[in-house]
Image (cartoon, rainbow, N blue to C red; front, side, top):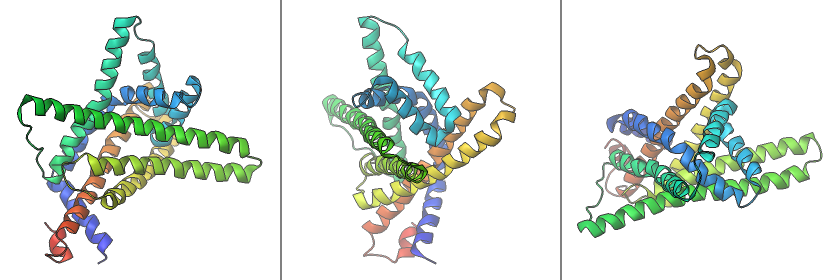
Length: 288
């Protein structure tokens, strides 16, 4: 039995043991509540590198790679409603506070869920000052992750624009689509790598985080292909009717949460195996 197969089995066992399905359902709920506030910040970052409408179109195009065109359209409608809500100084301030809180709430809960999966406890804060500093650090890290997503998408947008200008025939167009796909995969893998590296209160090396992030990104890519295929061939006859696009978005977010925690379990198994490699055989380590 290969080492990779042993790792996968150990990750699946840890996922079941630590309530991975329950954690996935909870995080999927927070993700649905946070997706619009996060995209508002991402759009502001991407808009710094292009016109506002072009930034919106590109972000929704990239989102459509994962949730399908119908799901991206649903999210776009929610974004439009958020953008047109309220006016004036007070409304703008309240809206900004809501966007910041909403965009970071998901990461806060995700950190707690990852600690449960790892079986570690959050360090106790010393007094109210320590608690405030801890919360600010947590929110700051979450905000930086959202900004990283925006910067990565901005880089993709610049690359997309350059490739569009260089296309001269069908072969070049096909090659550019492949490059765009790999770029999107790289951004997703990079984001998951940062999450697995910095969110849990555990010592995770960059190498371990990258392996887990890459596997998670690949599984999400495969899932997005299945979602797109289903929407293209079955959605029109779905029993959900006009709500089909929303249902597809819900299902994909739920699936993504399961994949995320399986990738986290795989990272956790690698981290524990590496930390005790000198004291026990591989099988004994991975059966812990």
